[in-house]
Length: 503
Ligand code: 6YU
Image (cartoon, rainbow, N blue to C red):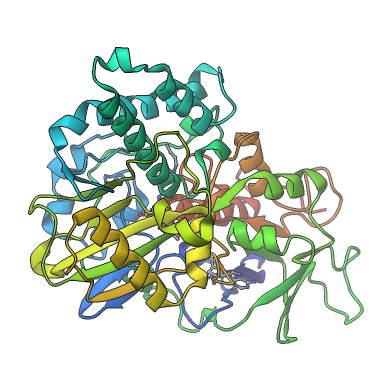
């Protein structure tokens, strides 16, 4: 029966697990997942800082409400607390911009009053919202989000603020702080690399972002437990996917599989269909060797041009908090940065300037006093090359400067290193300047291309970067896995309109 077709999924992140789950549910018997590492979950990764559980990768369920499949699964598996599941939480619609209660510290060691920062913060949030509107209007006054934001901030002269030069400078410095933090949200080096016209493609769902009290990995673990044992083959790094391997039915070994997968350790696996879920960063890095024959030119072009950057976390545990009890987000403002820029001049000496935001892990009863510092871009990639001690030293100096407290010292530190992770090669995707939804479609397009006379749907593509409205998220990745599984289900379902004739 067609259900006996050999299907291989490459990558055991949420997209790969989702694809396998859907295929099994529809009665496919020969499904396996090849995973390069010894673990599952991919960029969903829970770690430990002392006794605390911390998320090395994905942090929140963005928009936890009924339409969000990650939220539904998490509820079904009883992985969330009562409050996160409440109707009230689900009904909150913040349009993707959670309003964290802030504390502001400046480089002269002052704590700035939130009330004085509030108007400028509101102005900036407004600009961000406007950046998202160009997608539906089709206009694009600037090619990138960064250029638009900077131009709008610069339009405000000191007279318009009706204030003195000093507070004007402070607000410019604050805009820098926010721009750098925005790089973390988009996972990019600079907002000048993020397409303005496509910024609104990213869709948000209602619901107050929530976390997993026992760790995000509980989700991927629970999903895997429902799949046949031994469905995942670990430590299988796929080196090359050979497709159109036997155009006319048989290859030199006498088998009739159109796809053969070659692993780094020399093992090979034959298949009728392969679903590739490796990160866009991995595809970029291995673009010339991962597929044979190689990617068609338009697909390759989109792999090269689409954005995939780095966002890292630095967790810090303290004896006592230096922030207010209700504080959820700490902003650092460099008073000397009055010229708008979201990259730093000298990475080696000043990389730490890129880290301008820290979220406070809540609830305190569970975590104690733990902060998560966010740092994106090439400064973040440089940070990864330093020893943990060097990072700790630099962070300690930074906090001394901003709090004026010479005795302040984090007790423990843990940081992520997503750029140097050989199987992620960065954190997540964004629509880069010059790119559009067309590029995401190109990434997701199966091979061989339509109109070819070889066996259809040999190589399919899923993963976070292939989802046109939820890229860069766990739910986007999951939906992309389901989408490719459903493509195969439809292919083998005679009644479906999209079925191909099997001549
Ligand atoms: C979310 C969040 N979150 C923070 C950080 C990171 C990410 N995301 P995988 O890589 O998981 O799986 C592939 C597997 O393939 C993997 O196991 C590999 O080992 C394996 N593999 C690779 N090569 C192989 C080979 N050759 N052979 C065999 N196997 C191979 N998402 O929902 N909430 O809070 C965050 C965050 C630091 C790094 C996140 C978050 C992103 C998700 O983690 C990610 O999308 C999915 O886990 C990917 O799953 P996958 O299966 O596709 O790949 C307006 C505006 C617009 C801008 N965007 C704003 C959005 C905000 C996004 N925010 C994210 C923020 C955080 C904090």
